[in-house]
Length: 149
Image (tube, rainbow, N blue to C red; front, side, top):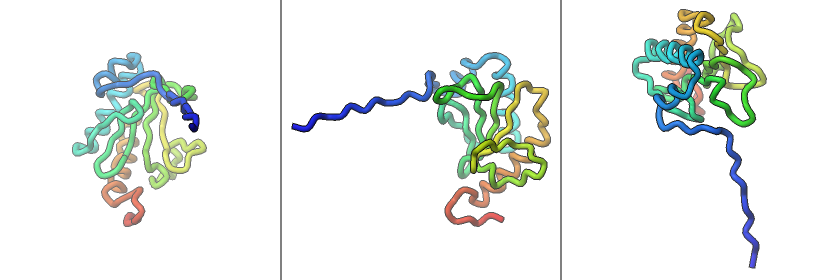
């Protein structure tokens, strides 16, 4: 009789939130303030957007994924190398970023901006990136059929 192999499931996170309110309650006050402002900016820009927790952080989509908010206190794997809150674009590589506002790291697709305080958030500039990401989403960005410009 063959011996059954035991596969150990790797746990990447120490937390599991049932909803956004639980997520917000978990955050330290400084991160919660940043997250609340970033969420407000997203909802102001994209009234039809849906918010869903993935990887225990809020992701935003209309047709496909547009952006996410990831506080450093919600770890993934062995932890993070940033502090504050990361605002990321799932298809950041498609955004026109002539001023190099977004960080790319070693990533090919997801680009982001880290914020350590609400004072660092240039609301108008961030909104312009969100609006561009929404246009790409509307045009089918990230699909196999590239119908966008």
